[in-house]
Image (tube, rainbow, N blue to C red; front, side):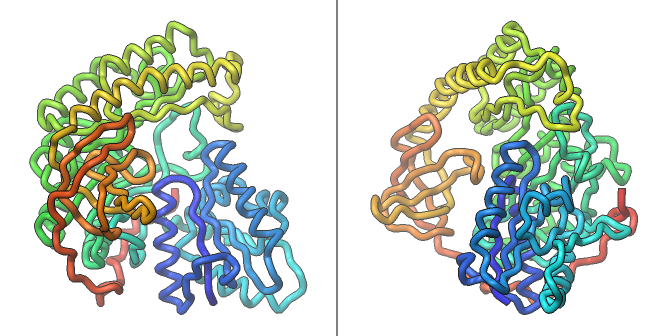
Length: 476
């Protein structure tokens, strides 16, 4: 059976999609480049915000109305976990639904759906949750490019009042270090040169099985840097979604010690810069502690690129509190900052708060925050002119003879690019000199192309991961 898989939402969904693809291929199914060439259509949905939910339903509906006889349409991922069988009411063309906690059973679901095709028309089959959560287990991974996301935990135990994720993903469940190391070695053996560690709350890694001193992530990072076999100079680790309440000096120390492997980049979503708003969000609100952490990080790793995200228009946000955010942005001088307007999600405490900010005011504050950040970002970019960087080629603009690249300063999907003239291929590693800066992109000229790694195209021979300990995989 040929399958076509569409991934929506965040990087954590990309990691899950690669896992589903690996399982499907291992069962004899084949990837198709377009929906028309597929017998099985899978959409890995996002259900975080209303806009993401609308996009997921729209994509499923578009595929559904065009579905030919014999095609199977499956909804996977966060929206499936969040509303389950209700999704079938919105997308009547669905044949199957599988959530975030059970996606490792995708082959079982497909086999069930193939058998049921012989019967009369039925309501979409929803894969039951079973008696355990599978997200802390490991599956063989077949990476789709030179960059791969490695999800080290799933779920979240933070109490943020605006967030729906704990309601459908449950509390955080961390993979054991042996499982993470196994997946990382698999990825490197396939030629992956950048591994991006992701989780809903990266810095809380290990808390769920008793690591409460804040050393879980630093210890794991140190193991990855010292125990994974790789070609020197051909591997990057990048950290995304670090929760500010659990970041500590040990993390700074490990990042500085291994900065040849751990790129000097940290993504830490803060969500606001005013203490009063952060208190209502139930987010860490010790601004002095946060500022001190970033100062120490910059002292230890002067070249580090810091990324964050903010929410404007949170219920009750006054003009004075919004100005507090702008002042914090000025003080901290983040290299990259994403700004979002507050979305009142059903079932969240913030969604039920009375003092909602009008949409037009949220939009106006979003525009002001973005305009406030742009000159900061441009100054940071201009400081890179004349510097030499290593970059990975992600794509090619054939018409303009441009390579679309990233250095340590740019994470996939969320940041800009380094644009390099010349004929290059995705996966090439180049040394370049920055010649021009824009607020989000850099332009550079190539100085050197490093030889490509000679690796096989398949999985390494040993593809069966070590079994996760019972306490790591138990349901929550």
